[in-house]
Length: 253
Image (cartoon, rainbow, N blue to C red; front, top):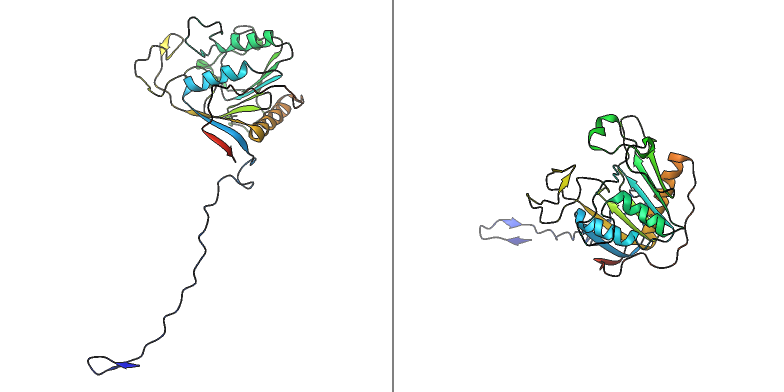
């Protein structure tokens, strides 16, 4: 106790020591509870916009030995992949995939596209099964997947090469997706059916290692459900990752 200036007696209580909590580490979004898989990727590259993705896809696919698996919301063989007039590489997706199959006798390419309702058909390519558009090579296998709930869709965009390198993100291999980060309003290359389309922005992530293997498992699982056919894991020599693509991240989950 002590007296203040007014003469009143004040009682002092000892201050309580509040418990000190340990600093909490931020919880990762990538946990088994909210992710289909948590794996490690030795290399990760971020590909911003269609021009970068298509270029990386072509260079990686050209290094494929045994397998290319493609999951898509929309797939169009008429998609223009590059604008290099002097290149020996086919500029359109369908002929590019056929050329890979012709060159590699052990290479199989599996394309699993969403079996879309006709309301979306005005901007999409007719299925090759009708013989009105692209004629896939006999080792390019195309299937339209309708194994989803009523009014649902398959929206995964994944490409896996030899179970070793994979692409995943927001870009399909289809028309009206190609663009550059400049997003020029008057870019003459940004056309489909000889008609210009607006700037388009999205990105893909390129991974290898366990992460690519996990995405390969998703592709095989989807193909099994859609077709009843089992795709076995592949063993291929070499590294499909093009040496001129520098990773943005290394050894990450």
